Structure formats: structure tokens, C-alpha cells
Image (cartoon, rainbow, N blue to C red; front, side, top):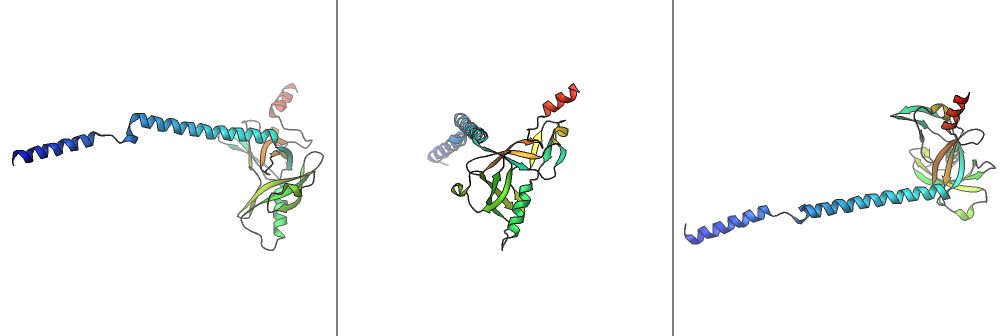
Length: 208
């Protein structure tokens, strides 16, 4: 092998060595840190927006009480929860049964009339949200029909472990319904339309 070939081979070997030592731009520490920081900012922004949305819903939503169907207190991990069903769900299914072709899955709105205690009573169903068609005491609530079952909102209410007895008196779920018809469960209410406060119940037991 002549000297020219040796020099060429040496140059090629050196170039290969340099190429193997080079780091892609996205693998550089500074770039990785920047990407991680931007990702964290994105997550925090998303969480903050959801918190603001929740607080707005909670503050501006119309209070609506929905009567509970039989409930089932049961343990769940480190706390307790109450499985919820709503009487209004049965009203929706009964109304859907009267339609010619009952769908297995659909989204719609149930129109309820609020009484003097803000308890919502079934009036009719609607395919879309049309607030201009509602009477002064009516509210539209979004529902989902999935595989023949109606879901209005969450079907569970979580509470601190050891407070199950207090919530056995629940007769209604207290919702805040926003201007889009979305319900947000906030509390459980007893038969005298009082929000159940397990702490107050515990204090009453101590006093007795």
C-alpha cells in the first residue's frame, strides 16, 4: 500500500472517529433540559386551566338537586366512596323506550323543572342544547347513553374514611350546572335539603 492510500485510510478513520463522537443536537444536555422545562410548563399550564375551569363552573353554575336511586356505600382503597344512581336516569330511559328506534349510544339533554327546593323533575328530552326554549324554572342537563346505560355525571362520591354513616342519609346529589348543561357534583344532601357535613355529625355524636 502506497503512502497516498495510507493517508486516505487514516483520514477516513479519523473522520469516522469524529462522527462517532458527535452528539445529535437533540441529545445535547442543554437541549434536553430545555425540552423538559417546556414540557413541564405545558403540563402546569394545562393543570392550571383545568383548575380555573373547575372553579368557574363551581362559582357560576346553577344549583340543581337530583334525587338518588338506591346507593351503595363501600370501601375503596384508603378512603370510602358511595356508588350513586339517579332517579332521573330511569326517567330518561323510559322516555327513550317510547322512541321508535332507541339508540344504544347517543348524547342529548334532559330538561328538568326546578321546584322550590331546586330539585330537578323530568320534563322532556332534547337532542341539542337550546337555552332559548327553556322556561324560567327549567334547566337542560347533558347526558350520555352508552350501551343502553345512561350517565348524567359521576357515579361515585368520595369522602374521608370513617364518614360512611353520615352519608347514608343522602337523598339528593347537589350539582352545579353550567351554561352548557354540564353537571358537576359538589355535595350530597339529606331529606330536609341540608348539605351533609360528616364533621358536624361527628360533633353531634360527641355532644350526645
